[in-house]
Amino acid sequence: MNYRLVFSSIIIAVGLLALGLCLRSGLKSFNDSQRTVEVRGLSTREVPANHVTWPIVFKLVGNDLPQVYTNVSATNDTIVRFLRDNGIDAKDISVSAPQMTDLSADRYNNQPIPFNYSVTSVVTVSSSEVTKVHDLINRQGELMKRGIPIATDYANPIKYDYTDLNSIKPEMIAEATKNAREAAEKFASDSQSKIGKIKDARQGQFTIEDRDTYTPYIKEVRVVTTLVYFLED
Image 1: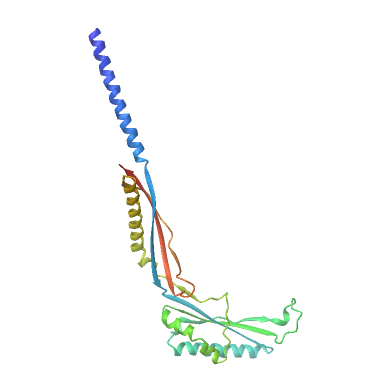
Image 2: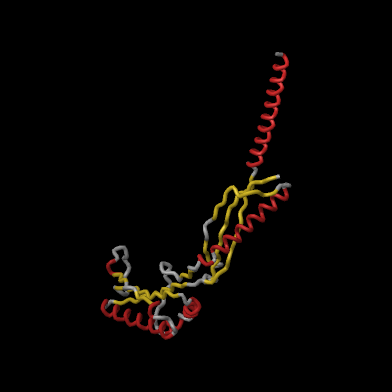
């Protein structure tokens, strides 16, 4: 009976010892699995704009409204002819309805006004031929020489856009991910560890901005990816 009791005690002790070792190993593995490093990878590209919108804005004034509208129509025709003569397709040109302001009806203006009416018209070029249109923008002084009062209108700015983002997305994401992994590997090396599997990955939003204020027709595309890696000994 005593022999059996001793033997049973030994079996229980060995079982408890094994259980303790397993728990210790499990806890160590659990702690190791919680060691992570979060890194970010950046990818940038400079690309030429592939679409331009050029609003050509002018204003004419007068006291005879029908005559003002006649002059506006003639001016629109002159602008369209200038564009067509310089290679802009008719499908890329649109003429907006003129906007009239009755200056004499402005009850907040107590000063004498030289003209009763002001009419604003906009001829818009929307084209993928960015280089050609950009050249004409630099030559718009030729329209002023023809007596067309081109106005600076902050409500209708010249816009250069890049619309082919999908063609460079995969390559940029791959580059950003590679840069993030290199940063993680450097961190792991410095901490005498190595990186394991990815715990989490987040792709940032792509941004497209002017490279600078002087070359709005050159765009900078950026994306940042965020990766979280497990660290292993």
